Image 1 (cartoon, helix red, strand yellow):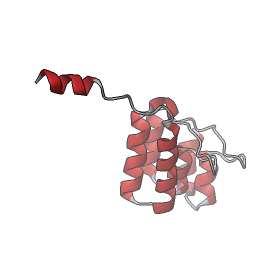
Image 2 (cartoon, helix red, strand yellow; image 1 turned 45 degrees about the vertical axis):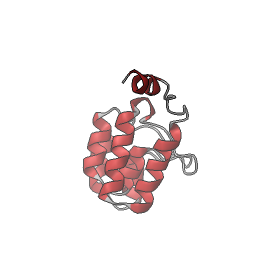
Image 3 (cartoon, helix red, strand yellow; image 1 turned 180 degrees about the vertical axis):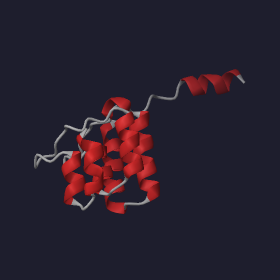
Image 4 (cartoon, one colour; image 1 turned 45 degrees about the horizontal axis):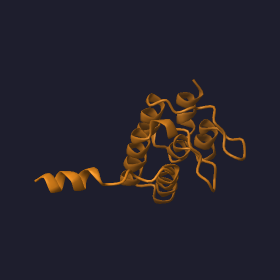
Length: 114
């Protein structure tokens, strides 16, 4: 059994650029717009709390923006509770509240405007 414990200790740490996984989760949630993809997005951000406001490399959208843009009120509330910044803007200068409005989810703008 000592050999198995030494092999466990020899496992290298995960690669450092974890922003890729947050970015991938953002992209997948936006494109797929499924419950599964949004659960995965929230779990990814929860596992990497320092990256809650990471912007997707292509669109500069954050997890909060895509959740707002898809009208995902449960995920928006969870992300806000985890500390997502409502004031972050994408490359077009739009906030998460403006994403919600742009995609027809005006009912969410009050939640995001507070």
